[in-house]
Length: 306
Image (cartoon, rainbow, N blue to C red):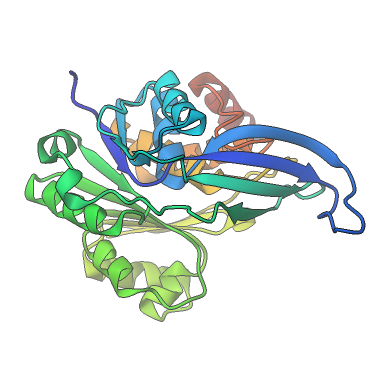
């Protein structure tokens, strides 16, 4: 088997997506304007997107014994993701998300199955040789103990760790702080940098995170684009204006496209612009992992916008 460029360790799930003009109520359920069954999960989606752009990718998560679990595996395999190290449990799939999309804005709300993430990958279930065969490990913070172990193995092998840290206004827990210490490329949502460092300004927060040991910090801010901090530069990449249909998984798609730039060795500005373009085009289609453009479509999109 050819060694993967990227291995993801985190969540892949099945999304049930419903598009409404307004949220239903018991006394006034309204109508559903559109629906789809899609596939999500932060690290799972990132790996699927990277694979669609030709990156050799593997993925590790748990999966159940029913049709939903089989779908989860098949959708990853269909785009070329290696699932040979996924870990099975003998119960129905628990990574199921229900996504409610606001028709006018594309914004969404989530509900999760009560048992969501009740089965976690354990450190002793990991294959160290398989993990360290990759150049990059991509984490989303799930399977905490296994993620910390995998990250440490990667660094012992001289490899790199990429972490997807979600937006937050809450105090950063100790386990996440430990994971950031083991991270080379941190891609974090709005508020995470401030809550981690105490600095309000993005540049100050980015520089403080570099002092922890991270090499690259990308702070994503939705409609405001993203801000990159490295030892050499700090810059802003504006978001592309699009008619958003569904923003579900947009950040996960951004991370997958960013992995493409890392693997190909692009400079940080090109990588950020490419990821922003893939993210924007994806938001024009209902359903996570749907509407992912080809490389040619992305290049044409970027050329049109200068």
